[in-house]
Length: 466
Image 1 (cartoon, helix red, strand yellow):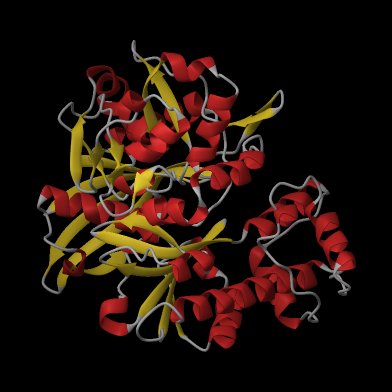
Image 2: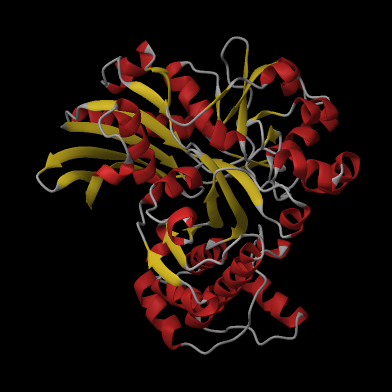
């Protein structure tokens, strides 16, 4: 056994192509991870809108595939995961109808209350099972419909970001279940499109393609992609847990069913919850702001929480001001810093400010709190605020589950933040296990390996090596 699977993992700040090679040994199967190509990502403002630069991202993905081919890796398949909710439209000739709009664009925010009054909060939750967030795809589509956006009229396929990348790799036009579940238009019970809500908005039903489950082979590389990258034409494109949270959760060892574990996918966003076989669609769940999103083999019952976004923006701001910021040194400084304010990290003021430091000071002033002053105090403030937010999420989840949580698996890049991990353990009273930091890429690769029949389950992999 020496098969390689490529995980293409797009995040809001960067993307990368990771190679995962499975090696059989006496002690079991080892997954060897290697970063093949990394590239920056970020929304681009054009006029009054924020877009993703899809052509650039697609070119960077192909560059990663080309590098993998040049290394002589025996590539079996490719899986793509991204952030949720955003989509592109493709016309009848196969052309992309404009660059996808970024979820941080705020044009659709004002439509949320009107939509909920029209549909009804209880009815909406009973169908979709989703925590209402202005970033959900339904509100972008409602905005386009309300503006009589001509792109809707010429579109033949609505494809979420992982589906869009896959379309131009292999020609597929399906929507993968986990990413579609972030839209606000999927029925959480049937795990298919809600014709009721699509009709309510007057959207063209035919642009919503078939839903496919994680582990489905979408197709093989288009001839032109094979020629450009040097990969064999029979390399498969697999629908993994295409929402990055779904791939990350697939890589976790804990389970609510076996050890009362929750997961916390820690990054720009914090996704906190448990994996369940069926959705919870009660009024209590709705009032507690929990979502039922799709995962591999079930439902992620979770809350979407603003994560390390505030700290990431601060660091960008400080670096732009000429400061040299090293996360290890910043963490050490924060460990010794004084306690200051506790922020509501989900407050809308932190979503897209031009001056994050000034926004924090203003927030503290409005709420009668002492603002941080040093870089270490700012980081400690944010980590304490996140830990407190996680405590509230744990309390809310415990009120909805038959038995309280005992353990929390922190996964993703934020699991490297030792200060945040410690403060979270202290605030929640849970046993906290940190890692793997590369959970998304690992989960992506493991599902590809299961789909290929190289392993029968992730449990067969006994070691992960860099």
